[in-house]
Image (cartoon, rainbow, N blue to C red; front, side, top):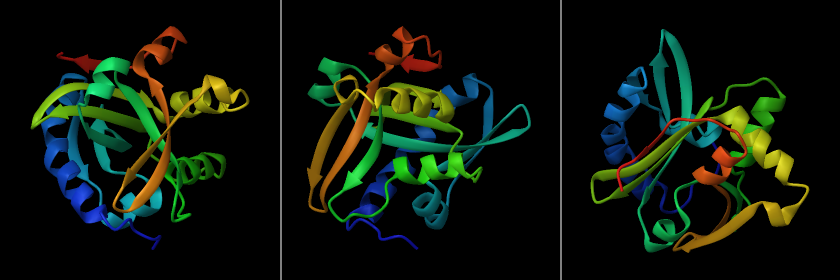
Length: 179
C-alpha cells in the first residue's frame, strides 16, 4: 500500500464525518446508495465514495474543506494534489494513469466547503472534464493556478480551478452555494 501521510487518519475521520452532510444535495441530483471507500481504495485509487445514479455506480473523489477567508475571497475551487514533500504519488498522477490505462478511477470529483458542520458550497464535476481542462492548461503554466499547503506532515502542492473559471470555459456541472 502507498505511503500514508502522518495525519491521514485525522483528515479521513473529519472527511468521513462531514461527507454524509452533502448527501441531501447529492440526492437532489438523483444520486443514492452512498458508500464511503475503504482505506485501500482511497489511498490506491483516490476513490473516497461510491454512489448510484439511475442504477449506475459512480466512484467519486472528494475534498472536504473548511470555508476560509481565502476561499471567501477567491471563490470555491476544485483542488487536486500534484506533489508532496514525501514524493508519494498524488491523486493527479494516479487518476491520470488510470484514465490512460483504462483502469478504475473516480468518475466524479466532489468538493465541499464547510463552516463547522454546515455545507456552504459544493460542486460535482466529471473527472474527464476536469482533467481535460487541467491538461489543456498545463502547457501554459500561468493559466493554471497552483497552491502550496503546509502542515505537520510537510508540504503538498495543488492545482486549483475555480468553479467560476470552469463555467466560463463552458464546462457545466452542478453546484450548491448557500452563502
